[in-house]
Amino acid sequence: MTYPFFGGILLALPLSLLALTACGDESVVNSNIKQISEDEPQSSESLSSSSAKFSSSSAKSSKKSSSSKAEEASDENDIVESEEDLPRCSIKREGMEVYVKEEKNLYTCEEGEWIPEKKTVESSSSSKKYSSSSNKNPFDIVDGTSSSAIYIDVDFSSSSSVKVITGLGMCEPVTTPIDKGTGSTKWKFSYNLDAGFSAIDFAKATYVWNFGAGAIPATDATPSTSAPVTYTNSGIAVASVTVTMHNGNTETIQCSPLQVNGDPITGCKCTTEATSVDFTATPDVTWSVTGCTSASSPLTYNWNGTDGGTTFTNSFTAATASYAPTLKVGNSDNTVIDVPCSAVKVTEGAEYVIKESNEYGEVKLPSGSSVVVYEYEGYNNGSIYCKVDRADSPSGYLNGSVNDVTIKGGDYISVRLPAGTLVSGARLEFTLDVPATCGVM
Image (tube, rainbow, N blue to C red; front, side, top):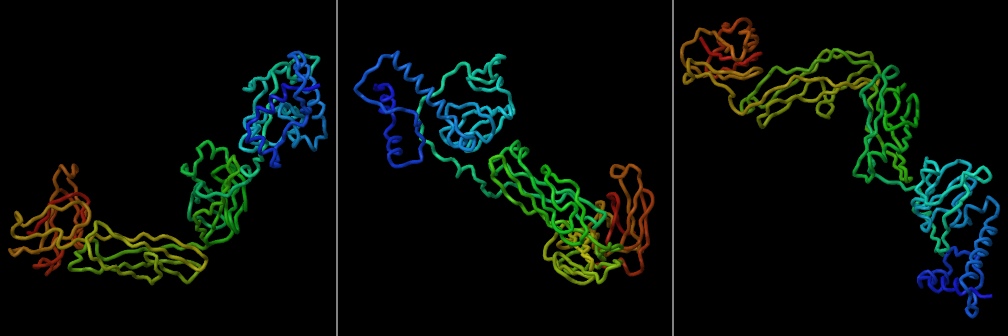
C-alpha cells in the first residue's frame, strides 16, 4: 500500500529544509512516517485511516524511559509528567506551551529556555481544551488537533548560556564614613536603563552581595539595597554585587569605597585671617588647622588631595565669590575625617571704596563680608558709622564688625577705630548680618 498524501507533504517541503537534511544536519524528522510509494492512489477515507495509524504509531513510539524524554519528546506532546520530561527548547518550539503534571504548571519555550508560568490551564492562552471528567485525567486533551508539520530542529543552547555583560549600573554605600564595630551602612545598587533592560527587569533580577574583609555579614542575597552591614576592620571597605538578569546575563560590579574609621579625631578647626582679599594687592592667602587630637598618632593632613602640614597657602590669579580648600585629617588607625575651612572672597581690585566722590563719604554694603578701601582725603575723627534701612531690617537691629571692632545695636551705630586706621589706602573688612550704609565721621 502506498501513501501519496504523505508523499505530497515531503514533496512540498522547502528545498532548503531538504538540503539541510541531506547534509547531515542534526534535524529531527519524525521517524514514524512510513515509506511512501507513488504508484498506489488512495481515497480520502483511506488517508484518514492512514493518519489515524500514523498518530497511533507516534503515540506508541513516545513511550520511552524518562531519561530520554527530554531529548526525544514529540512536538505534539503538550503534557509531560515532570520538568525532566520537557523536550529541548529550540527555535522550532519557540512560544510552545507544555503542561507539567507534577507541578501543575505551564512552561513556555522562550529564547532557548523553558520558562514556568504561574497560571492554571484554564487561564492559558492555549487553544487546547482539557477534560474535567471524573473518569479521565483532568488534563487529557479532548479536542484540538496536533500538527503533522516537519521541522528542522536547531539547537538553541548557545543563546541560552550565561553571558557576562557590562553597564547594568553602579553601587555605593548609603552612609559613609562609619565607625568600626558600632556603625553600619547599607549598600545600594542603582540600575542603568541604557543597559537595555526595564525597571521591572531589574526588580526581577537577583543580587548577590560580597561586602569585603571584616564585614558582618560577609555576603548576602538580597534585593537591590542590602541589609545593614558592620565592619570589624578600620580603613577602606570595598564591596561588590553580582547582578543576574532573567535571561541569564550577569555582571559583577565593584562599588564605590566605604570609609570605616577607627579611633576618633576631634577638635580640628581650619581658619584664615582674611575674609575677603583683592588678589591684585594680596594674591596669597594662608589657612591653618589647629586643635586636632586623637589617641592614635601621628596625624596627617591632606589639602586639596596633597599631603602637607598644618598650614596651606593658595595663590589667586582671578576673582571668585567664595573659596575654601578641602582638608582631610587622618590618624594611624585608618580614621579620616573632613574638616571644613573658612571661606574667603577674592576680588580684582577694590570691591568697595569710601572716597570724597561718595555722597557724604559713605558706601552701601551687603550682608556678609566686604572689603572697603579707604581713599577719603577729608577730615575724619577716626570713627566709622553704619545705618540700616527698615526695608532691609524690619527690626532695625544691626550686628557685625569692622576689622575686629564689634558693631552691635540699633539702626544707627558708630564705632571708633584704633588710631592710624583711617589713612589713605587703608583696607577695612566689614562683616554685617543685614545690608547697611557705612561711612566715616
